[in-house]
Amino acid sequence: MPSTYPPLNLRVRTPRLTLAAATDELLERLAPVVRAGVVAEGEVPFDDPISLYEDSPVREWRWMQAVWRGRARVDASFWRLYFVVCDDGEPVGMQDLIGRDFAALGTVTTFSWLAPAARGRGLGREARAAILHLAFEGFGAREATTDAFADNHASNRVSELVGYTPNGTAWATRRGEPAELRCWRMTRERWAERRRDDIELSGVEECKPVLLSFR
Ligand SMILES: CC(C)(COP(=O)(O)OP(=O)(O)OC[C@H]1O[C@@H](n2cnc3c(N)ncnc32)[C@H](O)[C@@H]1OP(=O)(O)O)[C@@H](O)C(=O)NCCC(=O)NCCS
Image (tube, rainbow, N blue to C red; front, top):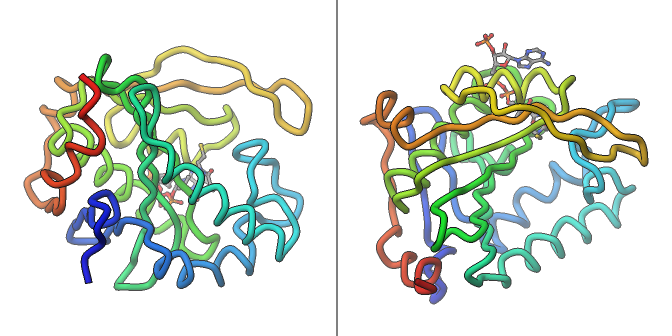
């Protein structure tokens, strides 16, 4: 049954995967992946702090709380849409779209993670292409940016392959130590040159009044 709340009915379909709005039912189906561990032993954090580095079951609780908190906050300065990445119907990770001052600036950022077993098969690249399609085609974004720690080769490579251009560097703390970020930028013009015609959006029009009514 569709949700009363339009952001929970959003869906992006590509020939390879589906990004389905993270309803509680889907979070429950993804929870075993979080419980099993999204982070390999000894791996340096890809984000910090983040619930995925806690021990189970606090990890699952904090992860759900973070999604609920983020879902509830929708105002002119910030919103975040949470999607579950489904591979052949199976939940394998998350792909988020974040709008900061979106009504005024039209800019978005993205964040994603996949279960270790689902990585390295092109799903990360496809999920990013899918979320950009939602941002640019669906919501009329002007620019998308992203960043990743300099040694996060998978994430940086996805940004490069999808067509972002380098946008300098920045710093963030990682386990209390400064760590360099590589920043990336995709303009609407660049996205339009690469626009795909095999990605299908649903639920966008109903969602716009929720996210864009701050003009
Ligand atoms: C980042 C992430 C979502 C990318 O998804 P993925 O499915 O693993 O990546 P893909 O299979 O689509 O690979 C895209 C490209 O990155 C390359 N790549 C993937 N993993 C890599 C690795 N560990 N080292 C170097 N390159 C890598 C692939 O070879 C491919 O490039 P190619 O086509 O030139 O060969 C996934 O690896 C992940 O969940 N990582 C942990 C969480 C994370 O870092 N999130 C981002 C936070 S900023």
